[in-house]
Length: 434
Ligand SMILES: *Cc1c(COP(=O)(O)O)cnc(C)c1O
Image (cartoon, rainbow, N blue to C red):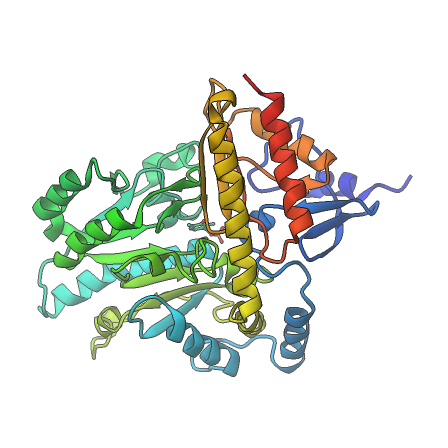
């Protein structure tokens, strides 16, 4: 008897973030278009979380597909040391024009985690290189600062700067030491300022997800206080690394979340929406000051980092195509439309909140989130799996983080599709009514 795709999958595939014991069999997706995923039987699902936060213009976009095809016929890949190519240079030129801050150089890698690894390695080596030549700043700074509840990826350096959690638990003793502080607020900003004033000269770098801690539970915090914290960090010459892997390209309503802030980062990390969610590509952009610390007659000052597929031309072409679409007014209007509707829906929920078993309704740009009050707030909560299952039955795909229910759709989602998603959210809220 012929095996189904799901059965063949279960014989050979190990899935990410999946406990394979008693797992729900994966759904074979045979094609996708716009915000819709289609399974083998022709059922459709609204991809309300943009396929793990990467998709922005919709699936299998014909314009991006065409540009990928054209590039694949011309130059699919070439080693990126000793050689260069048009898509990599053009993408760097365009990104440097739009990035929030004074960046001079683009370093390519493969995904969000590698973009973060590169950023941290740049920051650590910056201080070593500076000290070695006795330049401006002669002490090697070693401390690394990050936020509680942060998530910066799954490789070791990225895990190290992330909150110790169920995700990192087996590896905690192998992760390097990081100082974790609370996200800034009216209540703690003075205390945080004091910490930076006292210990700032020992801190090499600070990494942060601006305004939105995504994997940490779609936690939102205010630009005003982050700006105040960044003021203090800048005074102490601490290298500020904005991880905009998730927040870039309009996800939070502005082109970059750093656009909400006065203080711009020294290093910024991008991935996910960078290629419109079509191909794997990471970018770490650095300021002139960072880059200059690596320029030397002494070869040991070189940044010895690179991946086989650095600046893959097809991925860069996909990214250029996605930028073309993102820079159109249409895209901006789609984002503002989702933002308005999310705000209205959030206001509606909030006005009824005393009757509902949900809390912390919040929205930012294309992201809407709330918690289901369940008495068990852990990530391993079974509510998530149950909501995903109910959603699929309604032709919607969402994947709550524990009891945190959220949506962040591709910008091309139609008003009808969006209202289908809101209705579903109301349904699950109402079945849990007090
Ligand atoms: C997803 C994510 C990463 C990791 O990116 P991958 O491409 O999954 O390795 C890093 N930082 C943030 C803020 C993310 O949301």
